[in-house]
Length: 283
Image 1 (cartoon, rainbow, N blue to C red):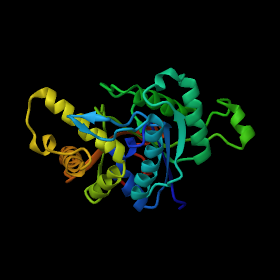
Image 2: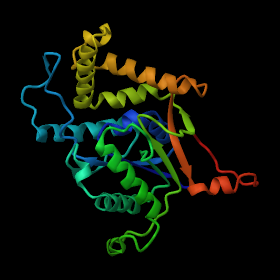
Image 3: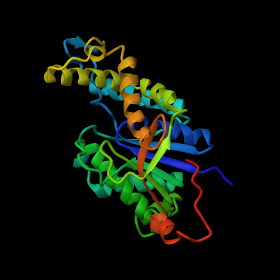
């Protein structure tokens, strides 16, 4: 059987690693071919000063965007993802200014180009999502996957040699999952997930600095965090990621897990339940 293709469509350079890094690494090891599309330039993904600690005195948005692109390639390589990432180039933090139809067309073009069997993206139905870029990508990618096999949706793609394509499986992730029904055991891949995240130096420094702002405002004391330098981010990131993955995995009997709302073949699996045929589940 030919190797399956996975397409990951996200808003930012670290989204894949945070939300599905262990699963993606596992799929790469199983022989899946994995491609990534990142919608924004990630140019706001840094904090200059937090808790009195200067991260970098002269980081411009352009400098940050360039750095984030290179970090995305390094993180992808750690997970076994094709480092030829497609960057759509939209402005970070302002995707809601792009029409749904424009962003959907870009996602549909990527689907017809890469012809994935499986799509990973943000869940449009998840509650409490406070980042407009995540919400925008969620709806655009979901609708693109739903209609990419309809030839009269963007028939101009045919002039470029892009044919309609059906995406059979969709894995939706979220910071506050709703109706998650698939937990993937990433116990053997947790270190690789952390390693990939640590390639995103700008974002990890910002994450630690941002957590320190929250900690200072709360009046609480977490020595590991309060005493950390954002530039020495790994102990904080490793602790945070392992705690989150352990809580997810524990519910399914795994040491570490990642959870998703999975849709396979638009409900055909439910319709066929009870028949002799069964869909193989490698994860």
